[in-house]
Length: 176
Image 1: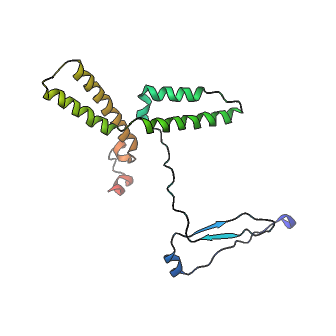
Image 2: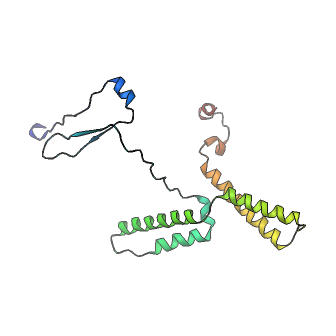
Image 3: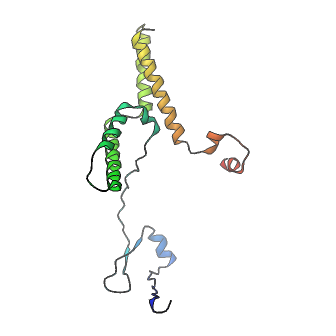
């Protein structure tokens, strides 16, 4: 210990309860030190209210779509001249950007597609078309879309008991 020991004094703001409840969005930030052993603090009573970007999450249902497979393989086959770790990071970032662009351009909402396909099938049935290639193609597309929708909700469900069932555990009893 001895001479090498450096102690840091914590600076802080003091406010009363009444003031704190009236100003609940206040932010205190520690600024960088400039030649001093103390870091100045900044009290922002009106911090900006921005919405953060939504975190991208890859969905398992996209694995079956050929377009997505091509996007990923193109992004991962891109060549970068740098260290292997940097190259991997750049490839993953490129993959992420291309997936986000794809999701924005292509409608991946299975529910809307299911409604559209069901409506088309109903129109064909009303016209008296109860068989044939058109109906078979629509039925197959509807079956695939329903499968993707099921995968989506299975992936979204976070409750253990949906996957594992009632094992009469403490976890299960606390869910209800």
